[in-house]
Image (cartoon, rainbow, N blue to C red; front, side, top):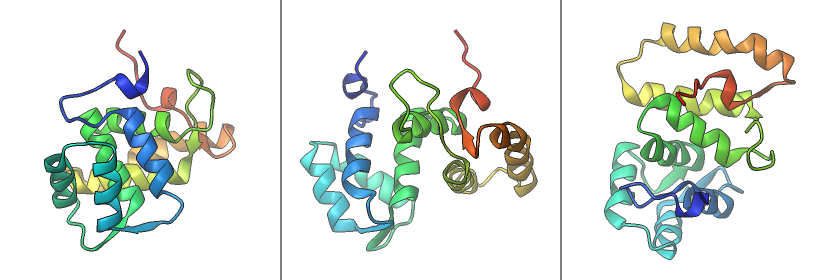
Length: 153
């Protein structure tokens, strides 16, 4: 199924989040107005945008990767599933490939979402990230979905 047509009940899809990422990621920070304009340009529900902005406690300036993380969370539901979407959207690998991204990007996304959750102790976050380090070192600083996501087929 094409990613752009893979809709969830949120209105946001992986394909639309990828489009937003291409439009807004060249700068680390973007204005709230800019995000609203791009969001509306894709005909996404405004109430969902307001929910994401509220969840992230964003002001007039938005850290794009933090907002992107919340978009992945809206798609995935769980932390691990959110990270799987992030890898699939951010990767430069061919579609259906390993979906690799730089580990430092993964760390930022994971840490942000884990802290937002509020229930996860820092020790758990640190242990999870260090458990991935050996595999990441073997992959030239890259992490791929299969390193942390167990498919339940």
